[in-house]
Length: 424
Image 1 (cartoon, rainbow, N blue to C red):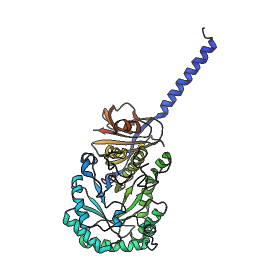
Image 2 (tube, rainbow, N blue to C red; image 1 turned 30 degrees about the horizontal axis):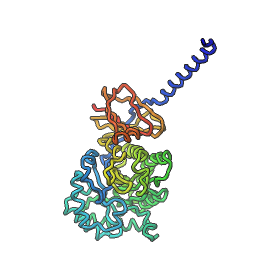
Image 3 (tube, one colour; image 1 turned 90 degrees about the vertical axis):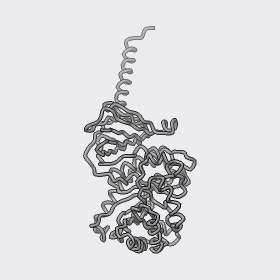
Image 4 (tube, rainbow, N blue to C red; image 1 turned 45 degrees about the horizontal axis):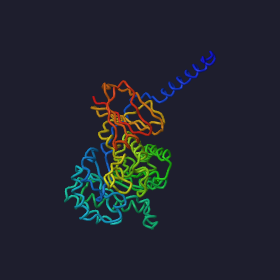
């Protein structure tokens, strides 16, 4: 039966409405990104460091770790540093894996409770073994000593007294030794309060002020957990502002003090793998690393390189986690950081240019499929694009690599990490 004119007009109107909706939707998912002003140099140690322990069988994964461009290792990792003395056997056991990884500079954590005499022994032992130690730390997460050691007398004042003693012992052997601390825990706000008090009491002797970031316990909703990545971008400028404030840092406000996050991860709960080895962990990690690089952090050391429960880029059984691929995609992200204009709250966007190539890191925090059009000086005709999303990883256990014409939009799937590389 033929349709009436009214019926045809209604159908046509509906089709037009659908078309307009589709166009509006498509326009809403396309973001025009522009490279803005330079933000400053990216430290070569900002996003290239890891905590390392003797239980990590790195010899089984040398190709994987060789692709990351590892520039520093923190040893011993986490609580291991204060739980037992750093013995000659441990130093000997470190030699081979350190060499296999490429002999990156070490950040050695001296046992707080063993004191300056033990520190002297450790420094001499590392010297004799030929290790490249760039940083010496004093203790790990001292803000938790009162509860972990069941003794409330372990205050920030006591920490600074011991720090000065250990520093004097280390500098008696190496007058230019770089001393780091206090490596406070991820507890908030108590960890930052302890960090501030330590800076107030001994900012004249700390060369690198250090803290840890662990915002969740692995039980949070995915979106709420992912949103905590932005706290990294809040804490770096906050702590940097303390350094030059005579009220906060009366003894060292006129000194050059570096900043380092020497442990970080979405969850602190080692035994719970959720939010340590999944796509949410990878998204959070990429967002955190983008901020650490572009906000001028001097040193960043992820917890951990490998197989400590849920922590680590590769588990003990050899499964390469999504977080590994974040670091693989970020390899070479350095030079000068640049602001990116045009992103919205769904998209973390970070740019680095080393003169030979422009790299743009994108983190789609949302459930929307996005696409971006990139505008930058001297873009080549073709862009290299790496994409890590849940569907692709589940299918291939890898991130995707493609090339795209620079004048076409780059897809940024829902809950994905994308690296755009423009080689000049």
